[in-house]
Length: 276
Image (cartoon, rainbow, N blue to C red; front, side, top):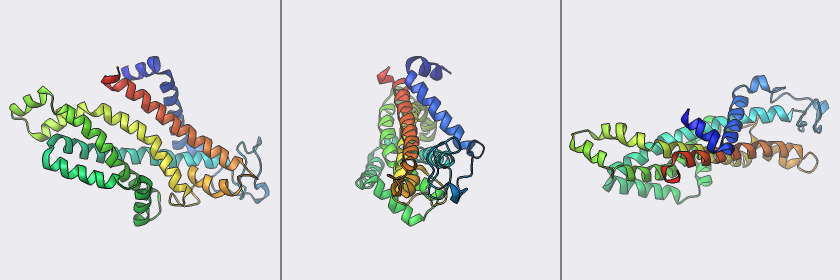
């Protein structure tokens, strides 16, 4: 409650971004009830209709309601963003905490592996993983989760290096506490703030990467709508004749990334003791 109060009082823009995120999550969870039509419901008599009272966002080349497809697209973006980020946080936190706490040879080996992974462009590595695993929502989540785990491990490792030098860690060792107890009782609770900040910031980035790979044709296969896929398929083909096909998915993507980034910045300012 204290964090929520500080967010509202000290970071009103962050609180507004949190409301946007909450709204997107509600829309994604209840898309079946919120959307006026099914995402694949076609009507050849209503192809490429501009926005109107019947179809607020217009229709595509198959007469499908664009508003409904944008709403169902939120399911893909929110699911991929939240689940892939959670996977990357779990892997990155485990890797970063263990590497930073034990140090020495283990830290050297792990960090050289991280360096080797980061030497390749992130989007290229995601596409390679998707080619190996095949298309599908689960493949997209796993590929994005793995690709973002290594950058996050660096952030968490840095926080762990600071925590392990504190006097209470030395006192715990002198008292005979095991490494597992020290990690669970002392190290992890003190790196939770960087983990939360990193996760909230990476969600928007993951959503943007998912849109990029969907735009390139490696995302969730049709007919399931995703914002990136809508921009690539009909949006690019009918950009001049029917601009609403690219405008509304683009606005939804922009709003989601903006909200998560602003919320992440606000949480960083509130949770990072160096910025208080």
